[in-house]
Length: 384
Image 1: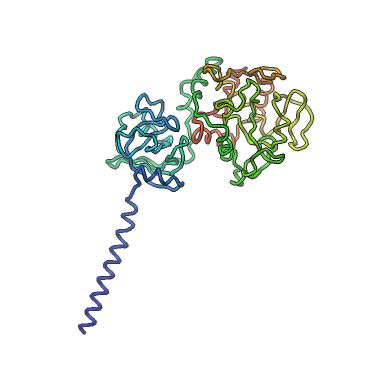
Image 2: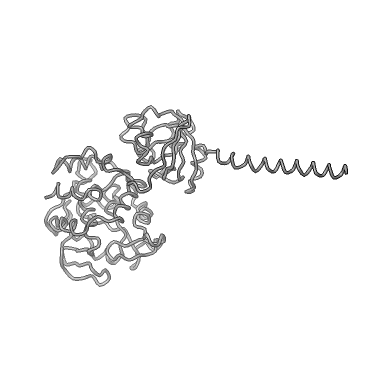
């Protein structure tokens, strides 16, 4: 009897210990948040809560400003409120519905405050970051609403607010000021960027080639006859900027294309007519022009409109690119044919693939947008 009682007591105690362990473990794990240093070490696309102090707003890979914040789109966290080393910061992309509450332009008093941010640990501004944020809470426990995944990455009324109501050259100048000074990539970095911006939505291992429309393995980039390479839609000889950082590496006009098709297009201006290309059916060319397939005519036009606004020669090492109504522009900083590009913009409206590409370039790489994808109506406000 004594042995039975002893065994029963031991069994009950064991059960209590087990129950206590089970009840405590999940609570401890659920309550845990990563430090900024831990978040920097675990950029693995996992969803985590990260706690840190607001130290400023990132505006570039290694640039964080601490005053005169230009917008409410991002903030930087660190383990110390006085941290100045960007290598010890994690950059947070603030979703649109949280910017009025946690954006630094609206709330500069947040600098130095402790926040807990829950989101995906992944690169932002080509720097360790947190994106797809689902919640932000203050030290006192105040929380934000859950973002609506259907909302656009950048509300047009925020990004383009200074362009509202403007027309003609005044609009062109204001759009230039908005999209100017983007984060520039090296030409080698363009390879990896295109694998994301032009990914085939039906096959994550492939990219879609601009002129052929062919889905091709990302791994086949290079110089071989059936490889894909980096096409400068605004031909790099038109302004003689080559592959220099800036116009030569601007993702808004760089697209993956078949090597031999790219070679045929060369530096031709754009116009209707010619002989159909045997490998890129639906594309036509002659001695002075190239006509892309119908599905991307508007894409091509809007890329050229972007380049003519982004590059105005107001920086010493950047060309002043302009559209004209001619072909055979050679090395002059002009591209044509404007009247045809205006037709193509109307003929082939903006589609979801263009919008997605614009969002990725803005959020992950250059942090500027193509205004004519967001507002195609502005084309006629400037050039008609």
